Image (tube, rainbow, N blue to C red; front, top):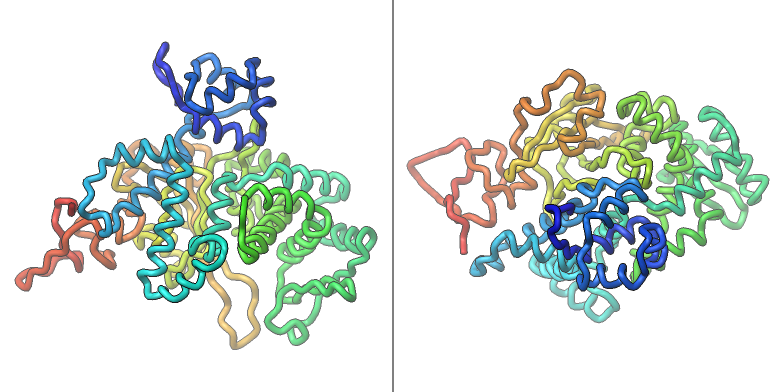
Length: 480
């Protein structure tokens, strides 16, 4: 975002996103920067340039890393546009990458609209034409009909950081004033004394397939005995989030614009979960501990009585101005390769319409369930990341039911890796990165033995006389 001295920078959309991420109005940020609200308005409409002095003042006043804020959204939007326009549908269109970058930077709203349109197209192409037609009669689009993707998009738009819920969670912990080991009892006492809700841990034969249930009529919160201690505290904090932060949650949901009922409910549940994690791991205490411990996930889990996945997820939310953590991305995948959770406060280009690369060692954790694996990975464009991965089990399942297993991958750009205990002793500039792709359908790397399908941007070559390392051979030239 910063440019050469004297260069005029017309970066209105970027500036507006920074302001919105800070939760400030045009008047408020104008006061902080010592300029008029009308000038801010002109900047955001690209009718006035942003000077170097304003950028420096912005960075100093709000403790911003302008390099991160200037590129993260654009990189993510560009990756999404690149995925869309790699589809054979656009094969006859010679669309330069720079035009996609310009679109991602200057017109993020158009990028979002194209995502929704392409999502509707892919659903129809998968043979769900009838469903698509039925949904067309309802308010919203087929993209809205997938509430999980809609809520994921909202989380990404907020960089997985919600200051209202962080403040409420810290206030709750200040009021409780108990150490980590006393949190469950303190939360149960608060529910009982303030809200007349009694907490009961119930045997599995009573709860059956349910891990948590709130009985509104009897004012009872029932938790299965299968839930471990960190999970029990989480469920109590979740209930407090619903009853004490309902107004704040509804305000956040209202800012999302029109949502169908399913997406709205899922967004509320997601935000209540966010509050619960923040209550277990209050921002200031957790951020300070993470920095002091060099982001040692297992020690953080022990200190805050939280699970491995809970800590990893919490690490993706450390976006508070003046107290930012490493911008992590997170992935949760099962042993069949299904992605059930993904968050990115950095620039990792997750695919919205496919799986992940099998060369990423997050998949290897199922073969080594008791080990934490680390890896330097490199995308085809040369961007490098550092990641750790471990398999987790949750929760205990009664015999003979299989115990759910997931792999959790946590990573960051290579420039942040030196802050992590897992990179100690590594020469991050020289270590060779494992070449991976976003997924097989978008990856154009040749001779990959793990390739599951040819890239959709290349022509498949079939040769009866040759068997290569990869099951698929394809042309070097991108199809037009």
